[in-house]
Image 1 (cartoon, one colour):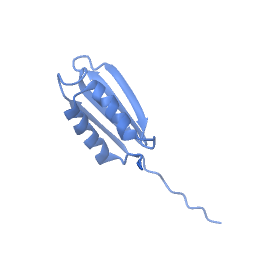
Image 2 (cartoon, rainbow, N blue to C red):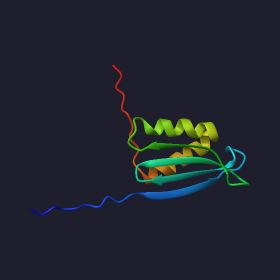
Image 3 (cartoon, helix red, strand yellow):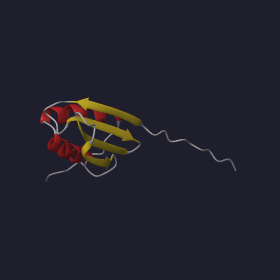
Image 4 (cartoon, rainbow, N blue to C red):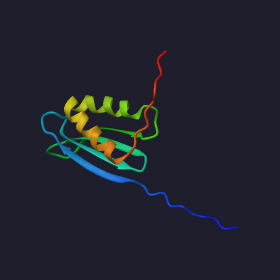
Length: 100
């Protein structure tokens, strides 16, 4: 019997958004590793992580969870820009609700 091994390629991407006064600390770093998305609010001068959170791309309604976290640390404009970048790198699971 032959076994076929497949390698799963882990997606790795990191981007630091230098936002300034419209974000907690001034910078937001997004790290994508496999199915994990980590978001950090970073101090402009000391590079200390002030607030961070992470989610799995397979979690229920992950886009809303990311949006909710980002809106706490930056403006709605930059929340949209960061979400746009994340969605260009990974596919986010969304719940489809049916209203009767």
